[in-house]
Length: 440
Image 1 (cartoon, one colour):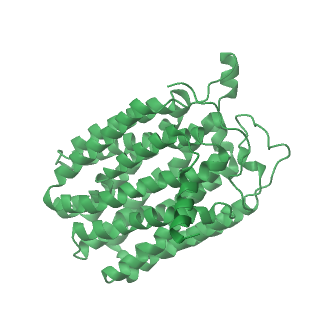
Image 2 (cartoon, helix red, strand yellow):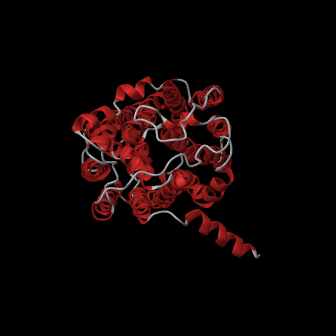
Image 3 (cartoon, rainbow, N blue to C red):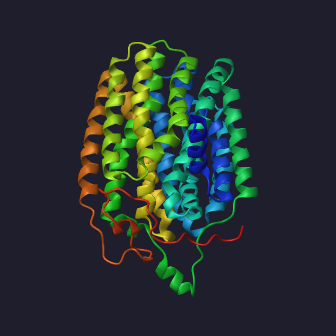
């Protein structure tokens, strides 16, 4: 068989067999990320275009994160109670309007306030997206589906980073408005093409209430909450690539286009390597993969302290991008396995809380360290965080114990991931049929 035929066969195997609704969800994700201007260039916009300090840029990004913290919980509850589709549509339409407003405000208090609103509405859709994807795709295909969705995120990111870098040199307002337009287009796709997938409660209202998973149930799930805590540490590392890196590059004299081109390498590598890498890691030990990815992320960002040229900077980006490609589908697959069907929204919301909290803490951490200690301390702290997270994953996932009879359908309060030893391969092997999809 020729190499071309092997590539075609591998590509077909990677994308075949997924439902049509998944591809509409994939398309909406791609459109959304093509407009990813605001978060990518907000730090440069505030420090270079507006002349604010790194600490103020960190404060604005932290408020964006604060909005995301609230949205993760509220969005998760709405996803389970109101539905996946209306939560996604409302959040994305609201994001489009808020981003457009952000492009016009100039007062520092107004910028900070609108940034918090953008953070809230932007993050409110994420639990619904992840829950819908898990609803649509059977367990044996979820790692592949999450990897493809993540691939769409980074395909859009790679394109938007380069284009937005040049747009920013012409007009930052054009970037804000372009972001808003594409986000609204994403909301239209959701409204017109996606079905509601929230599982229907069977029986009486009393039975439905008894079957419902509350936030207290999630909070009492010790192993899941440990995973959320470790995810926070890893997310903090990756957030510094989005917050600390542009500030450091701006202070070092790099242009917005330089940053756009450098960070686009992250998206390009994921676009090229994510699908073949996912095939390689799909049946390997998730515990070991999360340990490896944590260490690569921490020390990859840590090496930024020695990046005195664009070539070295690109090398460091390559290292932590490899970590990201391993971590993203593995971590998301683990969270889905830990989540009972009727509590997916809340579980995804609490998991998303780890990233939203990191988006709150990372800017404050970056601004304070860069202003008062120097960027080297920031990158050194990333190496420490990666070491702690790697050790934590090694302990938490090694101690997971299978429970008897858990191969069958479990009640709403019993996370189905406890059916297997997490330190062994095969995390996303099928354990039960996918839930029925409700009519649009």
